[in-house]
Image (tube, rainbow, N blue to C red):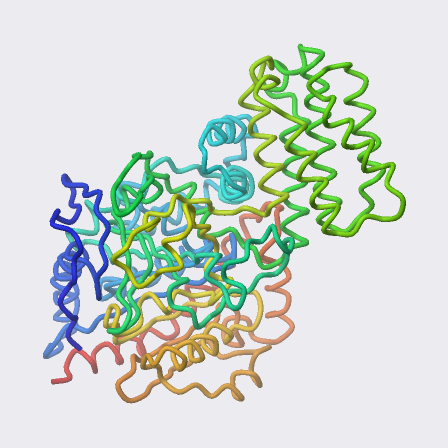
Amino acid sequence: MAIPQQVACSAKSHPGPSDESSDIRIHFGISDEEKAAVRNRGKQVLQALKKLGLNVMKIPVVSVLVSGGGLRAAIACQGVLSELSRVGILDMVTYVAGVSGSTWCMASLFTQLDGWTDLEKAEKELKRRLQEDSWDLSVALDGLCDAAERDDYSLTDFWSYSVVYYLTKELLDTCPSHMRHQSVMGSVPYPIFATIDKDLKSGEREKTLSEHGPGLQMLDDHLPASWFEFTPDWAGYSTLGFSTPGAYVSTTHCGSKFKGGKLIQEKPERDFSYLRALCGSALADMKTILKTIKDFFWKFIHDSSTQLKMLLTDPEGVTLKNTMDQLFNLVYVFLTNGDCLPIMKNLHRIMAATGSKHFSEATALINKITELRGQPSQDQQRQFIQELLEKSLNEDLLEQSSAPSFLKFLWKTINCLFSWTWGTTNNFLYEYGDTEYKLLTKKKNMYLMDAGMAINSAYPLILPPVRNTEIILSFDFSEGDPSETIKATEKYCKACDIPFPPVDGAKLDQEAKAPSDLYIFEGENAPVVMHFPLFNKVNCGSKEVIKQRHNTYATFRLTKYSDAEVCQLLEDSKANVRNNKDYIFMKIGDLAQAP
């Protein structure tokens, strides 16, 4: 299928290694830079196919999809890529697209000089890091204090330096645009990192989360504009077929401020540590997320790190720390439907004891709340707490503090928790006129998050006609039903009129607890989909072992994996490739030799 001609909305050139455009692009299909990278990659693929002795008639586009699943997915992704490389299949792959935890592995490989070319070495480094390195609270706190100076700080920053750093034992200061030098030569598969725009959800699209409180906000799987991708060259809302063009900005300038299509304030490009948190914020389990944030917040506020020692030398600093602690507890209790009144009374006592004029408005408001007769409604409580947060800390207090950056970090985290704000990113389409995405042009910020909230694999970003993929190798590391991504994608494609092979949902449901290690889906004018559940009856042997594996490698497990557990997970993921390599070679060969 031919790619339609690009419709560009600017006279400036696309960004290249030494030419970083600040323009917005509205176009169908893929960018010129990606086309060049794919052509160069095709030369590598052709050589790999010829080594098999095939009479190559064309170079099939093979895409590898790696799903979400926290650290389990990151380790399994490494195992899959290592084995694909060892058996010679990775050399035939054009795209690798990742969601959530798998992006932790993908990003790590791009920060290593030979990460993609020596995957065995990268695997050894992963095992060493998980066993020998540790999460350094003072390093994390330094990063959070720096991040809090940004006007787009959100819970994603907190997640980056807490959960993702804690699990991976790795901080990555390299930026996504730095991938260009590898991808443009075609020496590695072209990478795609998937996220979702939170506001583009089903139903109440223009309502903010603060209007109705946080909760499980599942995104509309059928809404094409909700998928937001990062590549080495461009970041933006992906093309949907030939009817809806994509909207993109240079990856270098994603996060900078635009208005009316013009760059008005350039911001530093976010690094891979932040992108990994953006892709892997795992927002499906509200209760678990809140508890995880609470535990890490407690570590930050009660640990005797350098910043805290500085803060505790000042009596007023002690009060401010205690105030922040109580405000966090107040927000947490409210979000978990607990009794806020005792915390408010304790907060009043702490503030009043200082005699500080800075707390006079806050203490007066607490008096007003506690003197109310009857129980305030949920909406009234939310309004009171929002007002209390605004009155409890001001610029004068920050300037007088001996650790203003630390207090700013605490303050911003509490506010973001209360409003449940994730993935705040300056909207490059703000007040931009030449686009079909009229909803997007109205907001100054977009709020990006884990794409697993829609489909736990990046099918919408590689399906034809976007990138003309002919074979999809889908490695599913999900914790629940391993066929859910397939069924959700089929539903998505039917709604969007995208070719996708038929799926026998009844059979998949019947085998959900003990799936096979490979399912092949084929259909007319549709890509061949080869789907590999991580834990299955071939590499595990029984339902009991499959269940045990899921329990051992739970998504929100925050305790260290032993070396044996890491090795077992790597072996399980490798077995799915090793045991089915002949089927993969056969399907690729059939397409390569087809006229």
